[in-house]
Length: 255
Image (cartoon, rainbow, N blue to C red; front, side, top):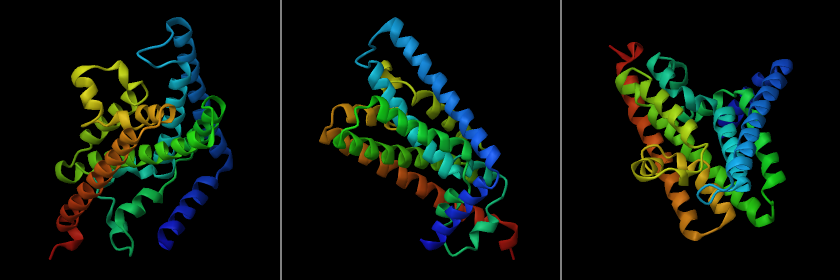
């Protein structure tokens, strides 16, 4: 654990080394988030409530989404790059380290641009989410689930590159998650809604946690825990199996 924490500190120090770029990137992503908020404010001014989702509930959804994605893409930045690292043979340096290869990779790189999402999401929730102690606890719980599900899913789809040598599945999975998780889940119906709770678990990234914040319930909380366990374990398992294939086929391991 101390080695992982040291790696994380090193990654933050590297991101902080160019302070001008650090703050420029954070400012850019915050402005992008503000534009997205303005879009939804204008939308609800014209349309009103949408299948049980009003302006405040969607803003809470966006607060969860920004914070969860900020942690995954900012602090665990290599979650998005597992596929390319595997396909391009860039894992060799991590294999000989006395730490978990996946844990090391996830914390090895910080993408400072997405750190702005974390701050923006927290501030947005404080501003519009009626942050009572109970709701803050649900918000924190929702963020943990969001990060685990999103990271597990990205590792799972990225690990397909170990077997195919291509990052197509990882790219498609990432794009699908980003598009679908930013909308209230109840606007989808039929097979598309089933998809959001299963193959592409975008519902668990923001919409379900936002619903839980508004109306806490044991059933929905257990569903979130189950989703986190399923996709966390699936991502870890896929990476572990893929890593065996990677090491057995690496040139430096051949006789």
